[in-house]
Length: 194
Image 1 (cartoon, one colour):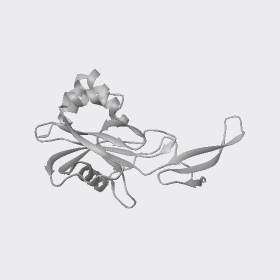
Image 2 (cartoon, rainbow, N blue to C red):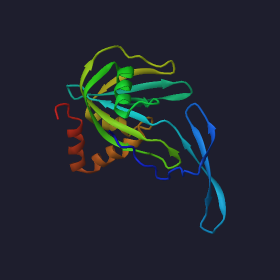
Image 3 (cartoon, helix red, strand yellow):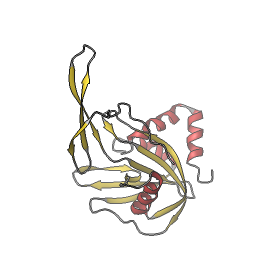
């Protein structure tokens, strides 16, 4: 069982859901301020998501070049929302298969965090190894995805690119670039044989 990361600003039990959307719900509550006055705070809640970085047997990493309606094209990993009643690992397996056509023998949880305090939303980042191509991708109507097989060094460069979608792991890439020990650890994490 993968533990859900805690929010930096949890929605209190006294909060009221004031809006239910297709992706986002809005919660409000009365909050006492430092001077004793009270005001209304609010926070969004949305389904958690998974991000999967598949690693081929030759060490290349499978990224995606994606287009979605109403958004600039971007480079990122396979991934998406966790469906109601679905566990985190099952969602990672499903999203990898749907967006790439690959199944993986191993999934390694790389990172789990709630990237912003104003949205109750956890992002789970995985490394997938022992890949096997089992089908063609099965994309949603709102997705156009082209797979990009990149080297580890290309991944590092793309990871700091302005239109790289997985912002929650960018700091890990910068850490590796600045610290030789972190770079060694990251290379080992992405080693298909490790």
